[in-house]
Length: 386
Ligand code: NDP
Ligand code: MG
Image 1 (cartoon, protein in one colour):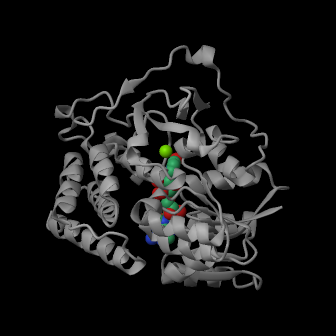
Image 2: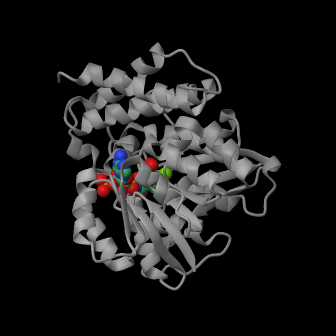
């Protein structure tokens, strides 16, 4: 039995993790979970999974749940940052699934590493904002970071039994997101609703917008840099609209190993939980290549998708530049989702934030938190009166 603590249990990845647990109740148990504001789903989880620790975002919701479940003497409730960290380091858990969104996942991740928990990591923003801290702490503590992001899971699977020194390059595939068939001119005036309809994947709102702007791929390039310890000139992006090849590794001898499958996040979530083993995943659509017929590939167009270029540039500069990239993106996407700015302004705001920042090399945690906060404030000051 593997005991799981789950950050972001009510989100898209969190709910699919719950599905994987449901499919294998003899293998997995959720012992601690955190959520944001969706307390209806938390109520259902409490009844279904009987976790021993539950954390929510606000003090108000904490009081509501604590009163409602006051008869459960064996169940502890918490809230806010302390609650997130308590779930992340929960004593009885052997693995943490970090499926919270945004750099709010950084502190709990570092604490979980120090508590020697292996981490199935979906929360890419944590690696983007402070990859050097996360990776060096993981190395020091001897814990494993198991990728959940489908591209990184694909690369991780392709590298099994291989020697990392033989890698020529990684090829990360990109579906192109909701607006892949539009020109830049046609992006003017697009609505939030249009941006939220992804052609291949059903995901949380923020990552769906990131996919449309191609920032998601930029964050993934930086995530791959840290997870696989490779320089940026060995990480390429390829447009592949079917999302069937989840990513590939090319080796020095010119062999390419790819991982394929129907788009379903439960597969990489489960692989991270069962690694190095595999388990059946019933009721899922299996890949039928004859049915797929053709797979399409195109070179990435950096003029069409400037956010990807920002990410490569920030990644190569390193230090606090990726912290700014991530925080500016989080704040700009939130402003777009709340109707304050247009879709194209997301990239303008990110570019502004990057251009005004003087990079600090090898920042410590305090510096990262400070830069993250200042960047959000800067974006918010621009959009506040909209
Ligand atoms: P969602 O927005 O669907 O879910 C985010 C989760 O985090 C929810 O449980 C939400 O709670 C919780 N949350 C948000 N803010 C806070 C906060 N301040 N404090 C505590 N909890 C909070 O996101 P996704 O599941 O789509 O994505 C999660 C992560 O996984 C992201 O880093 C994303 O990039 C990555 N990822 C996602 C994929 C996908 O298919 N969705 C694919 C690959 C990677 P609540 O809803 O209760 O408010
Ligand atoms: Mg991905």
